[in-house]
Amino acid sequence: MFRGYRKVAIDEPVFVSGAPRSGTTLVHRTLALDRQFTTFSLWECLFAPSVTQRRFYRLLARLDRRVGNPLERILRRGETRLLGALDDVHGTSLADAEEDYFVFMPVLSCFLLVVPFPYACWIWDLGEFDTRVDPAQRSRLMRYYRRCIQKHLYANGTDKRFLSKNASFPPLLGSLSAEFPDARFVFCLRDPIQVVPSQLSSLRDGMEFFCNDPYDPVFRDKMIGLLAYYYRNLIDTPIPEQQREWVRMNQFKTDLAGSIEAIYASFNLPMSDAYRRDLAEFSGAARDYQSVHAYSLDEFGLDAGKLRVQFADSVVKLDLHADADVRART
Image 1 (cartoon, rainbow, N blue to C red):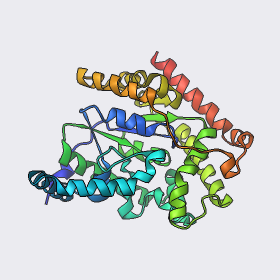
Image 2: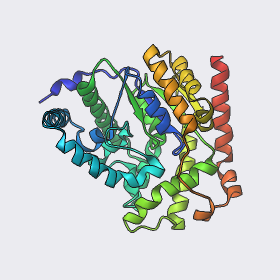
Image 3: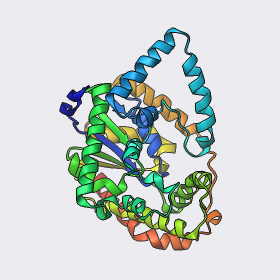
């Protein structure tokens, strides 16, 4: 019904990625405050990947407002019950800016399926997308993703710049940079000694919900190996330095606004006065934020020394990459 979406151009999209549990959500939601961007919300990913579905639900919302928002109140109560349990790990709501990796769920190509199916080999292949997925399949999935973005822009404003955030995208960096050669990438970094237990802990409740053992050493070691691949692919993917920016998680607490301003300067993005005010307010809230997500290496039987050895080479190379980019821009 809306075939015109196929003509929508995707110019210089911005992808926020990097190591999981490294501040990608904070960077994404901070950038999403800027009205020059448009990004997927959770409700779009789950319930309205098509233009027709978006138009239908927005019409329904307008009608609901005219009669006093009874459907919205029911939805909010259900949302609190279903998503409230995630607040200590990854607080979200249906209206929040969220990972658009969920749009791959209908075609069974979303790595999050590892939670209900932790021993399915084809899902683990998705975790090393650039090297283990068949080239023809990679091409089909990238075309599908392009169509999803075009539909989003068609429905939300073709004059806007597309913004994406996915902590599951490090394995797809080669495919993404080939499909979107003018894309800009923001890579968030964090010490693997913190990333590994935080990521395992974030999957724990979901694994238990599907009657899987989150402490199984086989699953744990495969996940650690996958995270090591994430770090390597951040290094190995040949993305031009002027199209990438590195930010470390410890920067967000002390100077979120400065980190975002560095991203804008690196990519030559305009910053409006209205967004600059929003950024200052959001940055202040970030300084006061205290996470309640508790995790530890001991919980998963991990040794910090062994993890440092496993990730040492990747961490050193990433630091060199990031520092070299900063020196080159300076």
